[in-house]
Structures are given as C-alpha cells and as structure tokens.
Length: 468
Image 1: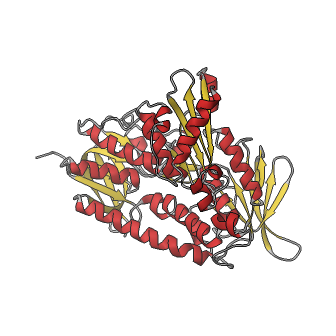
Image 2: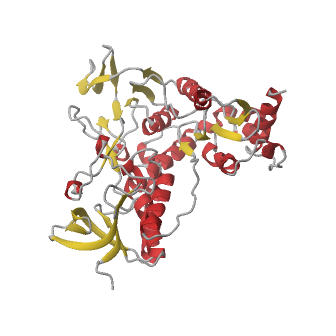
Image 3: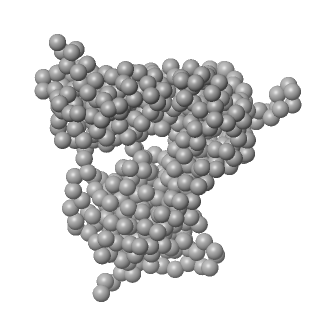
C-alpha cells in the first residue's frame, strides 16, 4: 500500500487538469481533481473558449454575416438581435460541456473534490471546504497545478461588469451595446471586437502595439485589418491608455471615456478591458514549497512541465504561452505520463493556432518574417477562396490559403489560412508539415470537389509556377 492518500492530486478541472487526471487514472493511479468553483471545466467551458466560440457562431448565424456577399448587405436572419438571443445557444453548449466533463471524470474513476487547495508541503495539500465546513489535509505522491488564469485588471479602473468589464464578465451583459471600445488587441480582444462588429456594433480597438498578433503572417493580418475596417471598426494602434472612467454625455446618457497617452479621448457605450490574463496562483501557498512565480503570477516549468520541485508539475494557461485548450490538454497528458515513468510519445514540435476572429485565422509552422530572419530560401504559393467553387458556394470571397515551402527541397515550412473553416482546414497542412512532406503531396493528391481543401492544390501549383 502507498504511504500517500493519492498518487496524483490535480488542482483545477479545466482542459489541462482534466486530461492530466484522466491519463493518471488510465494508468491505474488513485487520482483526485480539486476544483474551487461549484462547476467543473475551468475558464475554458464557463467563461472562455466555449462561450466565446459559441457566441461567435450565434452572431454569424443571426446576423446573416456570411451570406451578405450573396444576398446583400442588409440580409439578416433576425433584425433585432438581443444578448438573450446570443446567449441562448451559449447556455445550451455550456450545459452540455459541463455534463460531458463531469461524466468523463466519473467514468474514469477520478474523485472530484470541491474545495480551495493550497500546499502545506510538497506532498501535502490542504483542502478548505467551499461551504465553510473547515479543512483537511491529504497526502499525494505527485501534484499537477492546472488552476488557469483570470483576467488582468487595473486597480485604478472601476469595473462594474456592465459599462466597464472584462471577458470573464461578458456573459452577464444584459443589452447589446450600440458602441464599444476594446482595450487590448490580443487574441481575446480581437475575437470579441470582430464578433460585435459583425453584429453592427461600432467598435473602437485600442492597443499600444503598432501591429496585431506578431506571431501570425503579416499578409494575413493585413487582410484581417482591411476586413475589420470594412465592418466600420476604428483601430487605434500604437496608443497607450492612461485612464478609463464612466461619464455622462451632454444628453445625460451613461458613457465610458477612454483617455489615451497621446491626449486623444474616446467615448463609447461600453468598454471591454482585455490586456491579458494573470495566473490564479496567489492562494496556492507556492512559497511554502519553494516555487517562485514569474511575470503575471505564472509558473515556470521545464520541457516535461515539472516545476522547481520534482514532484510538482504545472500545465495549461498557468504556465503562459500559448495558452490554448488544445496545447493545455496535451501538456496535462504529458505531465502525468512523465510523473509515472511512461513515455508520453512525440506530440509534435509544430502546433496549430486557431484564432476565432471574423474572418477566422489559423496558422502552423513558420511565417515569412521568421524564414527571412533565419536566412532560409523559400517560396510562396497562394489560393483565394473566390477562385474555388466551394468559396463561391458559401459566399466567402475574402478567404485565402498561403503555403510557404523551401525553394530547393520543396519541403512545406508553414501554412496560414484566413477565412471560413480555417481552423479545420489547417490540419491537412499540419499532417504534411509534421511528416516532413513537400508541396508535391498537394499536387499529386485528389481532393473532394467542391471543397475548400482544393485550396491546397491551387496554392501548390501557384508556388511551383512562381519558381518557373
């Protein structure tokens, strides 16, 4: 019998924690997940990935946005869209995901404990009851920290969850804003900015950086920016924010005033403050076990997601970039495998990124800037959705697919896609890239017709033609 109560205790039930726990359970280990909220799933299901992506689909459907190139700019499925309309689908999906997650943990024999967890020592975790029934200590051989992050707030700003709010508060909005300022043009800020712009909200996007999403191909970003401006969005890039405050305009209406470092002032009905996220580590007692946090209370780990303490791992958003549900799941699985001496296998060195703006973006591998800096000779192949029958059928005339490949070996080096289905379409390129394939694969492969996948063949031919 083990000297410990558990083989593994996982702090947090989001994608990373869930996958870590299930992997350990499948290895026959006694596993517990400690969740400090009344529901499982973490930010991914309750306030982040699932709600935002579902909200996006609801906005696209109800606004008729994707069909306007065919039926005209005035086309809409519903003329007066309310937040209740948007949240109807969101609430349904969240409820289903919560039930699915809880069921997955139950059927794998993972004990789910509702409590606040903190360290007593590296092998002892204190569980404080959420209902005020005291606390108890449990011992464990290994611990995986998967507590995630929360929205970063400026203490000088008066957040009320209505006029001035973060992405975690957005699901509580009662009315669709007439105008909105979005402070912060990271992935979350961009996604919500484009969603509300598609609904007809006048959006102003503010960010102190001069360029959006520097890890994404510049041409793709340029196309996104053009489309954002077509949707009447105002971009204030290279502008720092010195203050955000509620005010009353000359007609007596409540507004929000954003003061910029340049002296400009922006008035909006509502303001979404989205300048990043902070690790939920302040209550874990990390100092008692000798774990230091870095910028924004995040935890540093090695290549196996182990912290400075050998039996304590950290995975998911709490370790920082890339902070994606997909990578977090794999990190959780990898950590459990490593802890119990099981080879986690090779999950791949190149990871896809899906950005659910409108239009959608997905990239994998290197971009032109990285290849140029590395001195790698490359060529480009492009395909436009409007050249593809499927693109015409679905009414996406702005989508594009871009291949980057080595000029000498023709090995695929990177893929960037903007348009409908980008995050699904990227996986074809991912498979070829991961296996070290060349663009000749796309030339010699038969794709279903009419599909967006044909873009790969068109882009490959385009690239070959560029080389003469």
